[in-house]
Length: 413
Image: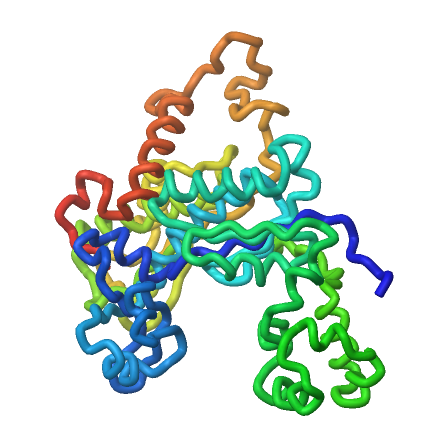
């Protein structure tokens, strides 16, 4: 085959046993133990298993009852999706430092197109090394990486040396890399297709690449032509970044309806703090703060305010949300859910180009002269440094690593 893929530099990054690894991160006593995360014992399935558990044949998607038979001494934990999303946001924030072309596959997996990043950050292999090092340093987790000229080969490569591995497939060596691998590693080869290919004597990818395309098409139709191209390492699909984020936030449904205003304030502070952390992990500041309140009778109301400048600080988000809460019946009617969302991330009116400040008095700040601040507001630079330190601690130790003093001692699942 003479046809070649475009000259792209693609990374596939895959967090190692992500859910289980986050549980170990939050509870170091679990280190080295077979950790199994999943649903209820009777009807649930395994969502993730540590590598210690995988030695016993436990892997994702098998029933929890089977996992308990295979590994009765395992540590079985419920899924904490909110926590995993929080850590995922931190990790993807690191990915986006190197390229805006990030295509999420799941919370723990993504493709990156770094073709245009090499001038700034070095060869693709070096970019992968830097990302892996930063993920480890800032979150305590490991990520395996595959580096190749296409999504297909990068994806397969990232799985070759797990956990904490890096596999590079040089341009022009794609088919050589693929040939000895089982044909089931190709996308689109399930049990039915694998059986059909086996009837043709195809067991490995090299076997598929070595037979005429026409023969595969006769057996599998158009799908056969596609697989034949993949067997030669040809995959022209581009990395497709996620759609522009319109809003971002957190919400909490309470086990028991809340009426006491102090309890509601504490919940609001917790939600604001987590919302701010998520915004910063995406490098976003929102101008519109929306408060969501659902009463015990399931009636839902929202209140919002639009600010002149975007914010990502938990304290400021809390203050705005608290003002909005006063415009609801919270404290008079029981509340079953609170949520805070921020939106309007771009096009901030009044912002001076190239500056993170707005002119409070209708004039542009003079070079070297700090812009005046409104009475009672905090120093933006100092707040940003504080938040950066907080994010590092939370990224390493989780939400319990550092929290507002008002929430100290509260148990957060």
